[in-house]
Amino acid sequence: MGVNGVGVTGTVGIFGGAFDPPHNGHVALAREAIDHFALSRLLVCVVADPDHKTVETQPQVRLTLAELAFAALDEAEVSLDLFGRTVDSLEALDLADPVFLIGADELAAFPTWTRPDRVLELARVGAATRPGTDVHALEGLVAALSQPERIELFPIRPLTVSSSRVRERVARGLPIDDLVPASVAAEIERLGLYRTT
Ligand code: ATP
Image (cartoon, rainbow, N blue to C red):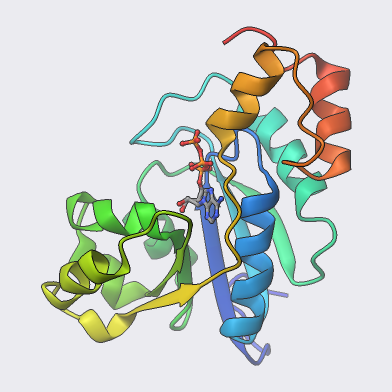
């Protein structure tokens, strides 16, 4: 099957992140986006060297963790994304009207991304609201963008988990079983990841 989805019906979703590590919030977002947008495929892109954050865990390790985390989702295809900027990933993927998925906190930063107008030409954006999201403020932000109709907020079951919280808990020797899939917790333990941050 070609990456441009030739011969495949249905909408393709793209979910990019550092996934350092992937957690239950990421999986919940993916699961609910598959339902909400009736996705036939979900490309999970592990960004090797994100523009906007420092990541110390090797890309290949994060790729393995993401493969484990999303293994339960039939639609998910996990790969390494060598572009630091979303606009470049989308240009390279060259998909017909995909949905690029983000958490609502990322949407707040969307106007500061490289070429947000071009991003909206290349993809619709699906923004999942998470705990503490000020939906009102986001609606105002969306209305001020060039193509507000290309952005859709969708609520997901709130899960207060972040990769930083997982890393902090591991560093403090605390359990993370409620925060990440069991296979991810086992691999973090096996590789001795995040013990010092
Ligand atoms: P960190 O804590 O290191 O900043 P993170 O948990 O935000 O990491 P990323 O890999 O940076 O994880 O996030 C990838 C995407 O997942 C982003 O669009 C982010 O908004 C979204 N996301 C992260 N945590 C959640 C959550 N609990 N619920 C829904 N979306 C989330």
